[in-house]
Image 1 (cartoon, helix red, strand yellow):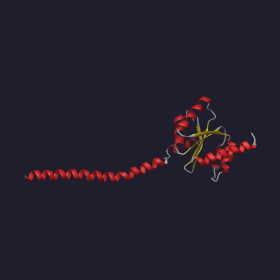
Image 2 (spheres, rainbow, N blue to C red):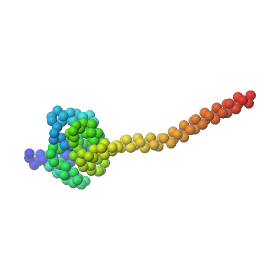
Image 3 (cartoon, rainbow, N blue to C red):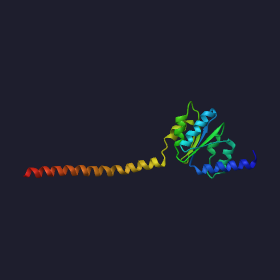
Image 4 (cartoon, rainbow, N blue to C red):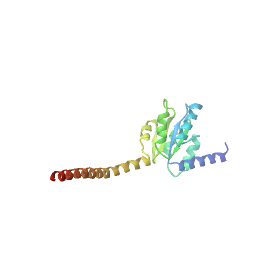
Length: 172
């Protein structure tokens, strides 16, 4: 491969890392063509960009970025595919659902400005909540007290109305 081609690939990888907020390094060594193709289809459906890269080119691309990705350099061995996404836990859920006997296996991940090294971190990555999930929980928590107050006022109003009506009818 010519030096110009390598430079273009390194720039493309670096631009993709900047574009997406999270990425996963996945070991696809033991996957055959059919299972790799199936994984690509699942990634496309889940809005994940899957890219198979040479480890040295990914290493050089990460070095060009402002952030320090040195914790990931030790994971760049064997066949590496990179899953890029905007929601931190989507690739983890996909890997957990599709992984049979650890294939594809998680090498490492960069999600929510943190590093997760090793396949044992998969459950922690699945547990990360997306921005929309956190917002939905906050809205639900904020709505809960207001709904309780309104419900209490409505039920109290019906009770008070019933008592007044009964007293009014008794007085006649």
